[in-house]
Length: 131
Image (tube, rainbow, N blue to C red; front, side, top):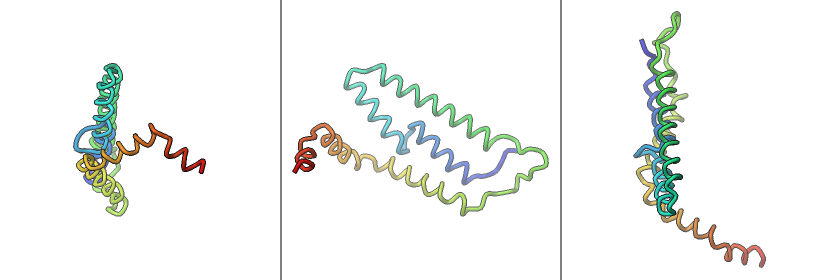
């Protein structure tokens, strides 16, 4: 019989899928922007590396998830033992935040463009520091 920890398994799945860069999680937007910027810069190899790294990460997360949550319960250990919700709640909150950031990422992209412009043009920063 596999281990039964549905809340912990779900939060781990959300974190793993976000890390791998699947939609609608927050990691997807970052990977998508990297791939688009790589293609725009003519760096097809870099775009391919990002995609392959995402696939390898997805495979690794699936293997860990299967090993931890789908492996049989060792003999002598009760499968009825549950993690208290108070220990699983922080992971659940972070999973919700990851989904909200992924779904609302379009609203944050203009802020990243402003930050990038500030990093590329340092004259305003230099004037403030040297004043």
